[in-house]
Amino acid sequence: MSGTLLFFDDERAVAEPLAALCALSACCIARHRFPDGELKLTLPAPLPERVVVLRSLDQPNEKLVELLLAARTARALRARDLTLVAPYLAYMRQDIAFHPGEAVSQRVIGGFLASLFDAVITVDPHLHRVATLAEAIPLAAPSRALVVSAAPLLADLIAQKRPGALLVGPDEESAQWIAQAAARHGFDHAVCRKIRSGDRAVQVELPAVNVTGRDVVILDDMASTGRTVARATEALLARGAARVDVAVTHALFADDALAVMRAAGVGEIWSTDCVAHATNAVAMAPALAAALASLRRSS
Ligand code: R5P
Image 1 (spheres, rainbow, N blue to C red):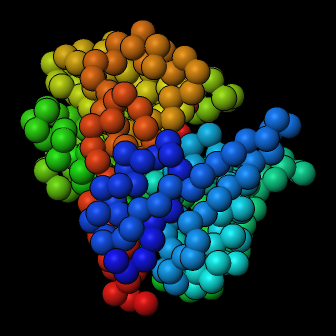
Image 2: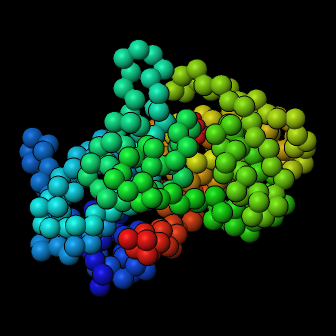
Image 3: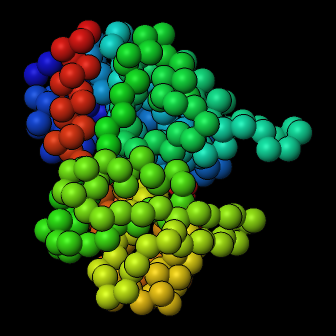
């Protein structure tokens, strides 16, 4: 074994195949919650020099404390090459202060992760006003901030399930994933315009494209409240689409998101296992293992 992959019990389903693909030993971090809510973590000791920590950062707040405790403890146990694999990377959307006094969460959380880890791998991070993951997470070695894209894998699934589908991105930011997926299978594609006026208040304007009778698949990096997908679906069905299915990398699906999307007329929903959910249809372990291997080759 060339190192250890540390994981938490709720991510065993991704951790064990990933460790096996990378020839890492997989060790679960034991977690104890004290009556007052504080956490105690216990890592396996001793640790090898190379340690990978797997933690997807949906529902991120407590997980960020776990990462602080785990990474600092791993260093104390003499881990020298510490990589975070965070299939979903939280707090990337707040990348500027829209109003005076607002925290620029991307900068704060990105700086925090850079202070803990030597390398970071994530999947389809929501980077809008910054071009690269290294800008969001300023690691000592910027080349060690790696992005894996799920778009080609979701495209393969769509090609199998809905050959000839029209791919639709629900907003301008989705254009990058639409372009990758369309290039891979030659899908027709289009991107909508979105106006968000609140957490759950979203308007979506369709582009000038004929959707009548078409199988449409909405592709995006994430659905959170599901309102973006719901409004796009309603507009597509109203314009004559035969059916609308959805493929997303990150199934955040907060509160009533699933019900809202279904009520809007969404058919199938497919997601990757970056965030564990009943809709998971694409396993990311092979792509994450390839990214870990490329880090290893370059170190
Ligand atoms: C933002 O632009 C993202 O790509 C998603 O479109 C957005 O986060 C979805 O949010 P919601 O599901 O809350 O509408």
